[in-house]
Amino acid sequence: MPPVAFGNYRETHAQSITDPQSFWLQTAAQLEWDVPPTQAVDGSNAPLYRWFPDGRLNITHNALDRHVAAGNGERTALIYDSAVTDKSRSYTYAELREEVAAAAGALSALGVSAGDRVLLYLPMIPQAVIAMLACARLGAVHSVVFGGFAAKEIASRIDDAAPDTVITATGGIEPARRVEYLPKVAEALQLAQHKVRDVVVVDRDGFAATVEQVAGATEASWHDWDALVGQAEPAPPVSVAATHPLYVLYTSGTTGKPKGVVRDHGGTAAALNWTMPSIFNIGPGQVILCASDVGWVVGHSYIVYAPLLAGATSVLYEGKPVGTPDAGAFWRMVEEHRINTLFTAPTALRAIRKADPTASKVTDYDISSLNYLFSAGERLDPETQRWIGEVLDVPVIDNWWQTETGWPIAANPVGIEQLPVKVGSATLPMVGYDVAVLDPLGEPLPAGQEGNIAIRLPLPPGTLYSLWGDDQRYVEGYLSAFEGYYTTGDSGYIDEDGYIYVMGRTDDVINVSGHRLSTGEIEAAVAEHPAVAECAVIGLADELKGQRPAGFLVLKSGAEISQEQLRKELVAHVRASIGPVADFKEVAVVDALPKTRSGKILRKTMRQIADGKDYTVPSTIEDASVIEDLLPVLRGSGA
Image 1 (cartoon, rainbow, N blue to C red):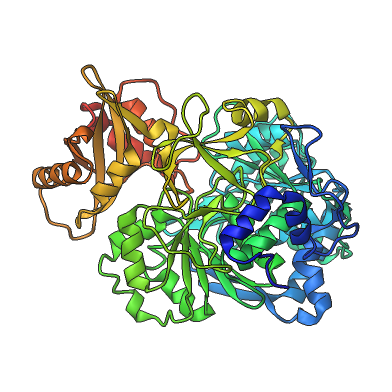
Image 2: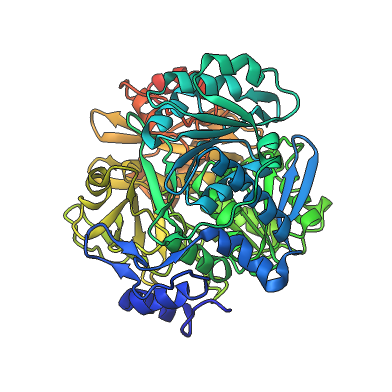
């Protein structure tokens, strides 16, 4: 069935805002329901809204069983491509359903049932996808923890979600090292106040720690995945309310009590099913590579649930954009798997550009199957967007969303109508998102004026409906700043054509001599320099001006320019691009920028260090040594 559309895209969006009941009921009708909903949105407990309150279904029936029943069981559902082990495997829809049903049966035999939480601490292996779907099949609530967190962070999530079961593996594989999981899981079980009953382990070759070595230090029973699944009776999908929780995902950078974003079966299925043909132009039998991790929201939505709901083929990639073995990794997979849409983060594109500035690796492969490149996770700077677009000769679609929303707030809906690309913009709001830019008092700002980006309630289906076990924290943290709106925490503007420009987090706005400037705008100008691979601009405390901008740059491989010459050229360029008001004068060349594992640059931490304030290194940092290396640079007056 084609996506719900009413003429052109702007008409589609308008209908979703003015008549959400009929729009979303029509959209939901594309799914198979045990009890079809008769009501779309329920506002009886506003500002806490729920979707499809009288419907019942199971998301895995829609992601697996219905495709098999329709005669498409032999279509490829999942391709596992591991650059770190040089292994690959494909699963048809029928095979994946069998694996998921068996895993669900194994969990059921351990006592897992609807509403129970299961914590997953797994690398990018097929069992991660299978375990997520197995939980959902039972109506259990999965909570995936990124496979690089320390024991303390795992323990804090165990205490918040209170799972009786943990599924893990012996370890994960990085390009230059192996990460032992079992000692961390055992330590987490000891640290957590909540006592886990069962731990299921996927055994991988080449890891030192064994279950026998670590199990004795815990109170849990430890099980082998293969043995447990091999003797299990397959489990059918359990019918649950559309409002039944599907998963809890903890946001990056959380300090103190974890902040668990929670969403449901029905809204998630309806929204993600709409996005695949409408935004990504992916339908049955087509291939998408989402080069993320199942530990992040992008992986939940566009490695696991959305492609399978659409009957498409999802590529599960265990590797990096560079270093496994080189900057041609993505292009190799495009050729081998005939990928139609590639979805990755801007930081991956910048890493590729740094390692291969002339994009010589692209020409080594046949990428003619590739139709689109989508990018999200952080701001896609215009220079990187232009570069990769010219290299691949396909539309580069910036899209903007958050862990909390679960799917794009703004994008270019190429499956309905490919809108003109404006470099630096995430294009238009997607259906159900009524986006506004507000001043500090909550008043809408005119086109072109930067302010707080907010979304008028209700949020569409598939977004968070609360934080796990803490409605009050959700209301206070997201719904209280501007009455009737969800606060995104991002700043930006909407132009005269309705295009959204996200310039950065609200704390990435700096005030120089009374002038509010976006660090994203300055970064965009700096990134245009041919020697710059990546940059972060932060506002440093200044006694005279309040703040002053300073740039920290990573240069492209082979760039030959002195720091002073680079500084002069950048100062002149920023002055020409933005104006003297930017007062951009300070530049430091560094080896690397501190980032979370999902690719977000830790600008706030950098600013705190430079200003001599107390700082906390987030648990989600990719490489803590980068901060250590930057300390003398940041403390030396910033740059």
